[in-house]
Length: 98
Image (tube, rainbow, N blue to C red; front, top):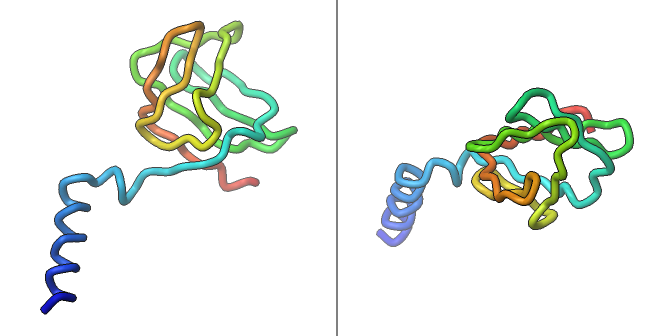
């Protein structure tokens, strides 16, 4: 009986908070550079290997923007600083080439 209740609780949490089940997280603390793909997309690199692609919500980023991580381990829904403005991460996709 306890096992069934536990399974129902887990399913309920995943239904009400789907981002917990599908969110990507990665450590960008060891990234060495970044590339602006378009006005809302940044690709982070470690040396010459892509680490992750970050899509921002309500911010515009340019090649000359000052980008700063607020923490090294970043997930969907976290934020980073772009030109002194806090920007929410809409999507974080971990690169398959690492």
